[in-house]
Length: 250
Ligand code: 13P
Image 1 (spheres, rainbow, N blue to C red):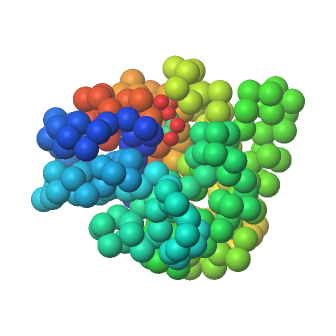
Image 2 (cartoon, rainbow, N blue to C red):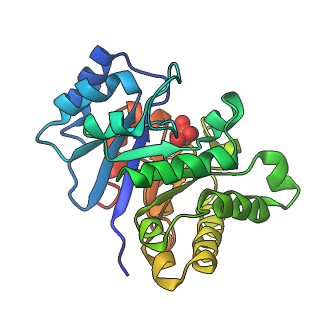
C-alpha cells in the first residue's frame, strides 16, 4: 500500500488576514510538489482570504479546530458546516496546546472527530506524550489510550481517510526533534493500534504524520521511515523553509 505523503503547516495563533495572504504569495512557488498533499492549517479568520490567495495552486487550506455541535448558542466557536462552506477539507483536532490551554480531553477529541467525519472533513488527530511520560516509560500506553478513545464509534471507512499526527510535547517548538527512530517507533505503534481496533487494510491506509521541530534539515530522514507519512509543522511552516520540507524528496 503506498500512501501519499501529507505535509501540513499549523500556523497556530500567527498571521493576520493580510499577513496570511502575503505569506501564501511568498510560499506558493516554494511548495509546488504534486507528489505530496500540502495543507496550510490557518486561524479561522484567515481561512477565506487564504483560500483566495491559494486558488490555482496545490495548497489546500485547513482549519486548526472546530466545535462538535451543529450550531447555536456557543459563543466564539466555529461549526463544521462553516468550515465546509469556506472550502476547508482538513481540520486539526486535539492539538496538545488545545488540550493544555483549552481543556480538551480525549472525549472532546472523539466528539470532534466524529463531527468532522459527519461533515466530510478529514481530521488531523493529534496525540503525543510529555517528557515525564516518556521518562516514565509510558509513552506507548498513553498514545494507545489517546488513539483508542479518539476513534471510538468511528467506522473503518472513515478511519482509513483520517490523518493522525504524532507530536511528542517535548519536541514542539523546542528545536528538540525526536530522532527518526523514536518517531518511527511511536508511529508504528499507532498503526498497530489502528490495526487492532479495525483491521490490516485500515492500518495500511491511514496516514500518520510526525510533528515536533520538523525543518528542512530533518524532514527527509523522518519521512523516509516506513510508518511516517509526512509532517505537521509549526514554526517552520511560517518560513521559506517550509518549501524544503514539502520538497524533502527532491
Ligand atoms: P513546531 O514545528 O514549531 O515544533 O510545532 C509543531 C506543532 O505543534 C505542529 O502542530
